[in-house]
Length: 84
Image (cartoon, rainbow, N blue to C red; front, side):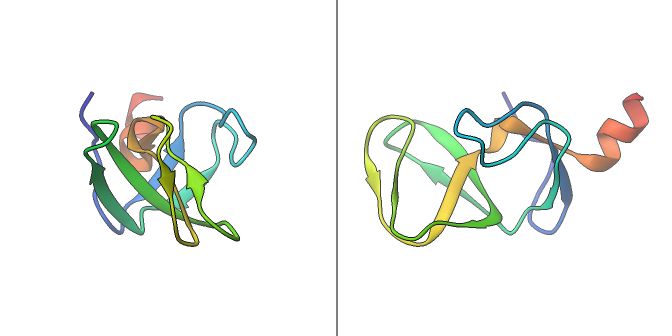
């Protein structure tokens, strides 16, 4: 699935995060995007911080304070408004 936004765009969650980090409909600004080769995914920084690393969806440990999320869980806010 391709993403329809880039850095600086307002984006909305299209599903709830399984660990409660965000809920469907929450709005964020895309701060950064990266490609993770370990799980073949594009991930987005929405400004949520974590004390010390987290486990990536593929099971690999990611160090740092940025909590990265699968970019496919979000859509550009402008596009969602046009759909509705």
